[in-house]
Length: 594
Image (cartoon, rainbow, N blue to C red; front, top):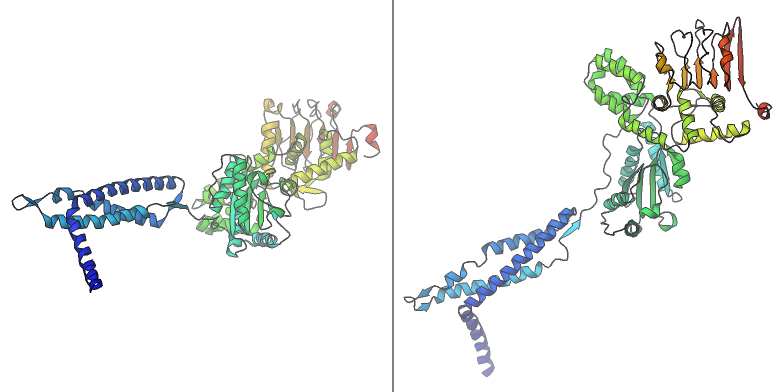
């Protein structure tokens, strides 16, 4: 009986005591609620400050934080602000407190207090945000799946699959589409799940290690917070090591980039990390960066170039009158995707006169007609050539026909201009020339010739070389039509004149060029006569090439060429006879070799 009575008392007394407590502790409960609401308000402010900082850092806010803020706003907006006034109401003519109101408010405050305290506990977030998953390199826009490109793309992907290859290079001249291709490789390996992560950083002509690190870190969703480049490199290195298979693309490399300075593991440090690089210079990839495989990117074949151009121009080329001109305009773009796209966008929906004007401009490229990106790229490539010898050889190539530059001619002209310093024998000179030619090929400023013993230049590169030679060295090269000779004051500035098989006006009686070092006149016109005093004012001339020129009668002014080093008289006409004579003033030690 005692235990039963005790149990009944427990069940009755405790609830009754709690209910009476709502009345007795009403004011205390309300005050406690207000205190806790103030603490919750402060907590909300702190969380909002954390959210603002996270957004400045480009981070995403956790969903649970937003949900918590919504709950807090509901509590604070409806929390016991006016409870105290209502709890002070009286009954029985103001003699007694209103017990009913006190009971209701005391109970509500106690219940709300529990909610507020619970929200405070839930608001103790370790972090309110997270770094958004990197968007990756993303799909390549406006990519054209040309057969010539697809074969190279597939070869690059196969090389990346090869376990024995950890560094792959892609090289080609400016505007040929290297960046587009490496991005397409990244897209394809991502679809094939060849790697867990693909990241890209642009190196550029003047590498900024901090920016390169940041671009790679962004691709990984990594925040680099170290103060020094070395500390950031360590953070990036550790993060890349944790990715089992990762492809790092380094675009537009001009010179050696030390991977350890950036924080990129390679080789045995992390066999799952493979590096794909693009450059304008094959030597940078193979000799300085140590790539295992290199792939050249050529200009588009004529048919693919026309298909791209026609697609971008649209209906304008459907007209027969425009189509003929458009085909020639596309041909003048010489297979460079960036130039084809630029010209196509400029001529879209234009009338025939605009097409004809464009064709006239493209007949002879200059700085204003070449796409800015292409011109800037060529300018940087030229300035990056190491030494005056190779720069002079490049400009010399620009004075010859772009599609047929004979190595033998470069040797003769180079010796005449004394380009090859320190060479005492003809063999040494030839080896030096071939080395420079290989470097120009590696820089994509020269191409393999169609015949043995020759090289050639892309039309845009050839026009660029002509413009630089004229700008920096006062070299006149006639690449197209030559209607009249410049005025004497202009002629006197020239250091070289090249007329490679172009129709030219009659020669002046005396060519007043006191600074002229080189004069190349390659001409098949039998009616062209060289005046007797033509060479009188060319006393500094070192190279004279009169290929296929009528030398009957022989100009007596040749005797004034006291500094002549190289004389070429291929297939010249002397009366009824045609001679093939090349002579070179050489030192006695070289006579036997020559």
